[in-house]
View 1 (cartoon, rainbow, N blue to C red):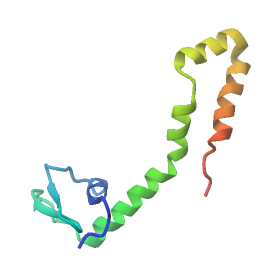
View 2: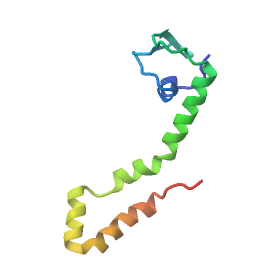
View 3: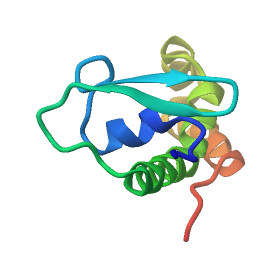
View 4: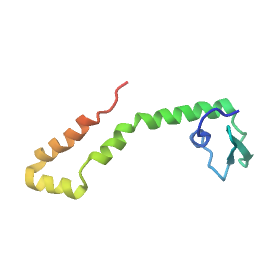
Length: 106
């Protein structure tokens, strides 16, 4: 039984395409592969779970990027900032966002 909450993420990480290589179905308590269309061997549940965990960890590690994208001023506002405050003023604006949402170092 696949234990990952969204096994399609793991299957995609393994190089398979939903509705082309596989179809998932969900019942009351689990998600499972309803049909396997791919010419490649179907991965084991353990391989799917491991790939799902890895894909989720990669996604989670990029949270700072998504936070920064929302916090950065629009391109028009950044150009206006450069015009009014020079490149150094613009750099300060960008640095403030980067300082608020730093890259996580491992």
